[in-house]
Length: 88
Image 1 (cartoon, helix red, strand yellow):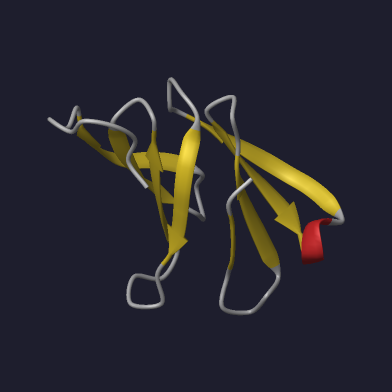
Image 2 (cartoon, rainbow, N blue to C red):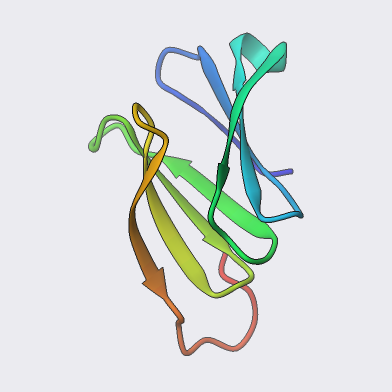
């Protein structure tokens, strides 16, 4: 799994082969929730300091999804990209 930590190191974000994104509290000790939206393996997750409470995830379904980390809702879906291979 590909992972990212938030700025306070209180949330671990893990990409998954089943198209979901797992959200784990404090160093992965407890799974808080899952983000469901991709149709294929999630290859990359990114939490950005410049955009608080936003998560970006790229997947093998050739899409990038922007998530609101407070509401756990999908904000935007970008794709289907004309791209040969996976999005990393």
